[in-house]
Image (cartoon, rainbow, N blue to C red):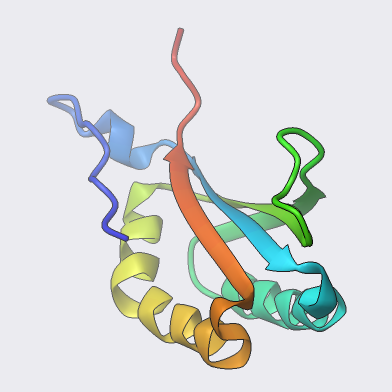
Length: 119
């Protein structure tokens, strides 16, 4: 997935504000326990990278997951857009490939980037 760069003002203020990188996941119920065990290690590896300041894992209640699946949402806090850009360029391909190698089509993930509104 390609992430569009943050809009910047003349001062570049948008790039210096913290961002939230959200990964929404649906995993087959039969693979859920193994996926959650791996996810804990995966999150720890990501949090060791420069610029990541925290992560929270949520079970998604609404909208409900597809039949036979469990929905999760992982929200990663980063110090700024530059840290996310570095992650996406230097680390995401390898980490995503690891998840695909382990779980293949037993999960799906979508991502979005959020930044707190100034208004």
